[in-house]
Image (tube, rainbow, N blue to C red; front, top):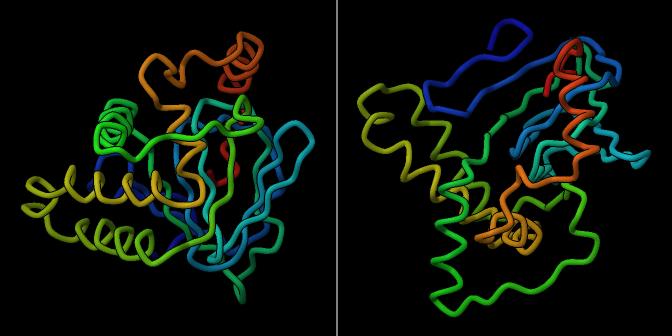
Length: 199
């Protein structure tokens, strides 16, 4: 990437972003997604709790949430580079059902009502993310393989440190849009006039 901002990869729901200047935390709405930082660090504030993540941990947001987001340390010398991956409810739920059917039982997660978790990068997540991003350079590959590569990455998320948290959210009958009314109203207000703080 040669300019700051977000760019499409050609894969639905997958974007790359860059910042070479500090971006203060501003109100934003996170939809269900994973944000993986390749270089630099990013911060998200939810209910007064500050989450800082970099190339050692990715952020998993399981439902639409009103947050504040930014990157206070980005500069030309230490740029922020990252990947935004939207989480498709249908596919996440389908994989969760298949995992349950295969005997990989889900365990309750404390404080599961709020929608953000940080998870350490593991080999499965790293390898599946790399394969997904590499798809974006060839249109025929994207057409044929994008859902398979997304499925692989989703499975890595569901088996990683944020896996039980995400599975509880995407389990049948517990759709992300069934969040608390107060969160829905706050999201609607923020969408009307706020920036995204580079995701």
